[in-house]
Image 1 (tube, helix red, strand yellow):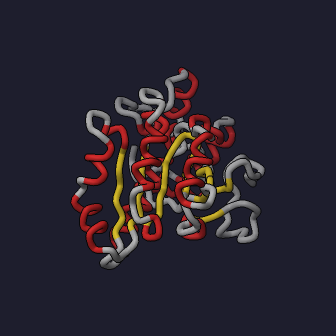
Image 2 (cartoon, helix red, strand yellow):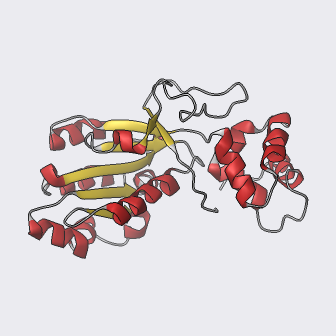
Image 3 (cartoon, helix red, strand yellow):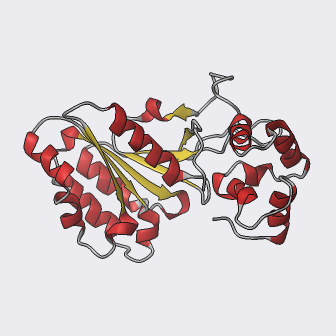
Length: 247
């Protein structure tokens, strides 16, 4: 999937989501008083964060972009570390986390904030149902006063039993947020970056009734699938009509 310079927004878990009449996310940069819509910087630092979302909505891409940005702007001794649990499957969690050179330096320094981002919890839970508890137990041994934790998981797969375990660990319940759909301007930006007339593309998406798919990065990306030779819009619509599953 191509990377676009989108600004993504989050909603408190279970709260309302405001859509435009066409079905795009209402733009909080145009309507600043929208209920339950937050930029990441508004929720960062509240406490342990659970960052959720539906399939194909771009959770990993959005949160990894936040981690990259943090790494660029943080100054010593604060650090940001990204861990993808899918890549840790063959290894012991304790070794992978505590033997990480950056985490070791942070632990030994006794100063600075560790912004720890842990992705793919949902995928690992399918093969190891106890990994969430082991992860929280591992984290409990760190200096929690200097730790900002971010766990990424599909909404439907989040094990709510972990809420209590995280609260016991940090002394506060986790703050849970869901990644929201794309705005109209986000889709126009992507189309423009792909050399497609942005207004014409969005108008075509709206007229064909596929806004719900276009507002998720995973399904929006299908317009640029390998092997497509049709004109823009037509190829995107053909894929949707043929029912090719979302990435």
